[in-house]
View 1 (cartoon, rainbow, N blue to C red):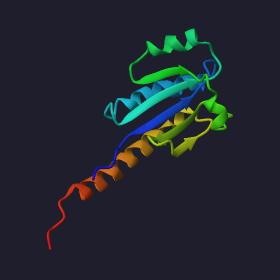
View 2 (cartoon, rainbow, N blue to C red):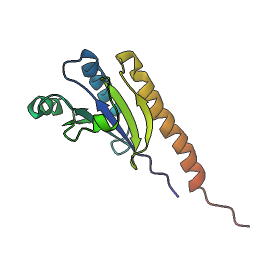
View 3 (cartoon, helix red, strand yellow):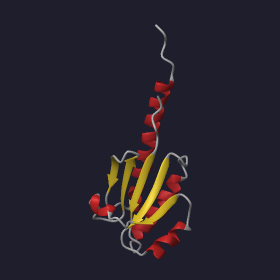
View 4 (spheres, rainbow, N blue to C red):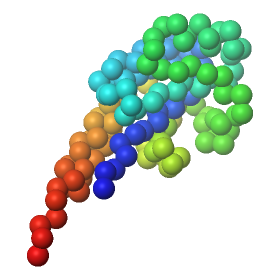
Length: 133
């Protein structure tokens, strides 16, 4: 049995907030440290128009920039920007930080590394053959 090691990072951001823009840069650097299939990063913006947001998609291939058209920021009760959620592929929130500042971004990287290290240990144990009795 192998544990599915995939996480979804959602960054809620506002284009006029300097902290939001700085966090986006740092998230792109963090994404490069993880295999492409292990972490998907989305930057959702509920405020700016789609043209403004689309311009960010040309900055890198590691973060998918999108307009939050359905208002998920309301669903998750996001009131400060930037805010970051880390979810499992089944939608469970396993990390949340509201109103993140650039110096807090190390918590995101630390959390992702810890998650993958702990799951690698579990995978190594579960992939071993069970001794026959």
